[in-house]
Amino acid sequence: MPQNPASPNQALLQPAKPFTGVLLLAHGGPDSLDDIEPFLANIRGGKPFPPKLLEEIKRRYRLIGSRSPLLELSRRQAAALEKELNATGERCRVYLGMRNWNPFIRETMGEIAKDGVGRLIAMCLAPQNSRMSVGLYFKRVREAQEELGIKTPTTFVESWHREPLLLDAFAEKLREALAAFPSVETEDGPPLVIFTAHSLPEKILAEGDPYDRETKETAAAVAEQSGLTNWLFAYQSQGATADPWLGPTVESTLERLAAEGRKRVLIAPIGFVSDHVEILYDIDIGFRQFAEERGIDLRRIESLNDSPAFIRAMASVVQKHWKE
Image 1 (tube, helix red, strand yellow):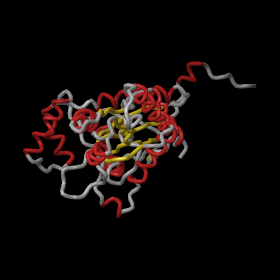
Image 2 (cartoon, one colour):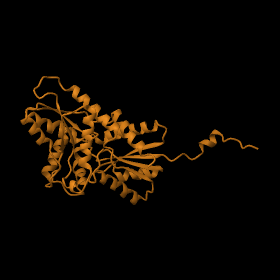
Image 3 (cartoon, helix red, strand yellow):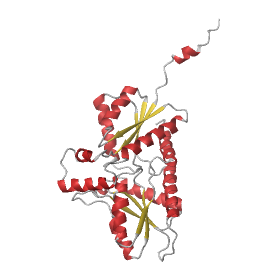
Image 4 (cartoon, helix red, strand yellow):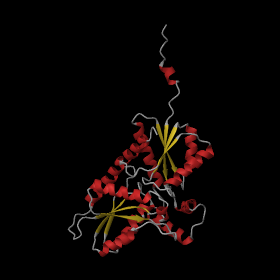
């Protein structure tokens, strides 16, 4: 005699297929002026910050609203990515962990363990790979897994600097910014684009770190996709240490362009995917003032933040790692 088919209620009692967790990793940023000192202490491994430098950093944060918008933007990115991924029929939950501020990576890993994630994909919100940056995020994840006894199979997205949809997202912002530049007749022609990324100590070159190559590959690919034939690359936001940092700097590049008679420059920070102090102060205030003093009208492309094109790019990267 044939067995009775399972009733709808019986089907509902079947254990759900374990869902995939996606862990987005970011640097973190202070939520208020009072958070700046402990935030910087986290970056320096508990070492106190020189008082003069601490006051300068507080001044910069006051000029951009007395807080970092990074957490809010990263949460919006996570929510939009989760919606995009689940629309494909996958069971997925997106988490957010910060290296230097709340929510810390360890806290988020505890949440992942409680939720019973079947497998985890860890992805840093920095497209170009470096052992000094992305490598440290992944190290924190592995340390938390060991400390908490988490055995969840984990895939680490090492780099996504040439993801086609990421290049599309940057190129879209670049074209919009070039179109918005006032159309005026100048001897130096259209605005010159300077692609930028966060500088790191020069010693990474001797160690064979891929960061310098990958940042320039992203810049070249976005330039090609945007039809640019005349562009430059420079590093920004060098650290306040005695060690030499990757260059050329944006400031030295602007000095040279001013001497050549350049009047219009567009900054395209392809090493960043969100607004934060290196965008809102370093570029929008510091570089703009530096350029203005030298007769240059400097502007920048809009950050990717939670733009639909960027969310699609992140989803594409995750989907390529589903079965790894």
